[in-house]
Length: 292
Image (tube, rainbow, N blue to C red; front, side, top):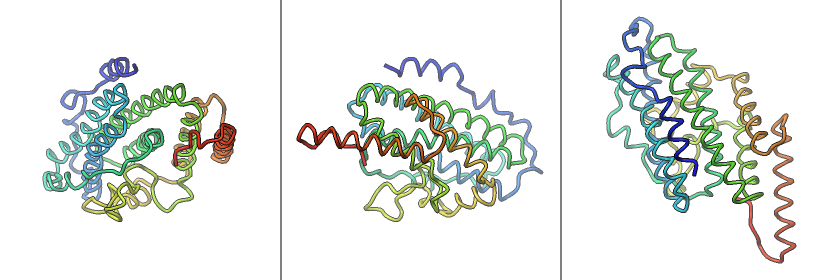
């Protein structure tokens, strides 16, 4: 089991909202209304760890180890929402999210292949780490800068834990797991080709609720994310390149080979898909089919 070791590791570096956030350094003159509004949107977005946890527990009922780890992940993600809300409560109480605004992002996600979902959230943690690091640079108020730097480190640790579970999945499911991870890796490392930000909170997850079936679509300002990324924190091609680099680097660690580009990862994905199809044909049945 991975959960006992991961619990100890996370416990050893867990930060305290009271002791480790420099609340006394607040400088009101360095917080703009525009910046404060984005803090509210991020606080509500972080609250969406609630429906994501419900999804993980439902779709991984046969994996008690991973579900136990969700207790750690869920706690820390909700803590991120809480520390952003606490910041607003102290310094911009007019912008504290209402309970209705928080509850609006809790809705049921359609069932999806567990391996693909794991990979999707692994990439999401990498992307969020970089978003928050860039947000810390964009903000000018010292306390919120420290908060974003703190939660960015949490997101990086979460990605590391997901990677451990992905390695374990490959020992259990072999090429089926590799194929699922490579497929989603190609998708999540190809953000430059898409019109939307590739993060789990911005993907459609409930066909019956479409188009209000993304976390972002259910925020008070559904258009805020693109504005935050493009105009405010200016998450440009250089920063996007950092995300792609980290995804490819971790895919290299996972598959024990190097990927210099998304195109190389995509060729590897196609090779895996062909091998699985040939294997299925050889045994005269459908065999294990790569998750779609």
